[in-house]
Amino acid sequence: MVGDADGAYRTVAARGSAAFTVRGSEFVGHAAPARTVEEAEAFVAEVRAAHPDATHNVPAYRVRDEDGPRREYASDEAEPSGSAGKPALNVLARRELENVAVVVARYYGGTKLGVGGLARAYAKATKLAVDDAGVVEQVPHLRLAIGTAYDDSGTVRGILESEGVEFEADYGERVRFDVWLPVDEAERVQERIRSATSGRADLESSSPRRTGDASTGG
Image (cartoon, one colour):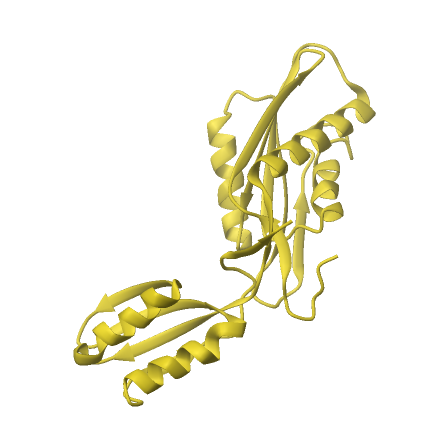
């Protein structure tokens, strides 16, 4: 079990999908990382748009924004109560996954599967999609805003590139870098920037977020 002491958590590494057929009904599972509820809902909408002729598009997700409470959501989407959304969500819970969304599209094949058969099929589609996406452990990141004069911008950019961190640069009257840093690396990187710019760079960090690059496989 991944501990909460250091904020690490399990999620999917990328998008994944898998399909199989049961008694004529085709089930197509899709999984994706989702940092926020909005990203999860957008993924659900995207999959529904990709399967407009599916008989059902069943969503489930587990998302924790910032350090807030975890949001869990699932819907049976007109399948019998408890036969679709909950089995999909249970797979995510049993595997202790967060910041992940799944959608299982079902194309009805003419033979009813019953509540038990549906539950097994939706759970299997979720599991296979998650397996295809791959499970990783993530560490909390924080957002660092760096403001600097043009003379120091090349130095700051060089440090960020050497650290291999995700960042965006905005060249206005001053140069602004928006950076995502692993929490346990943040102070060291900030000290490098302070030292390299003799304290001229403005540094402002946010609260840690439960997102960022994958650290280890799981």
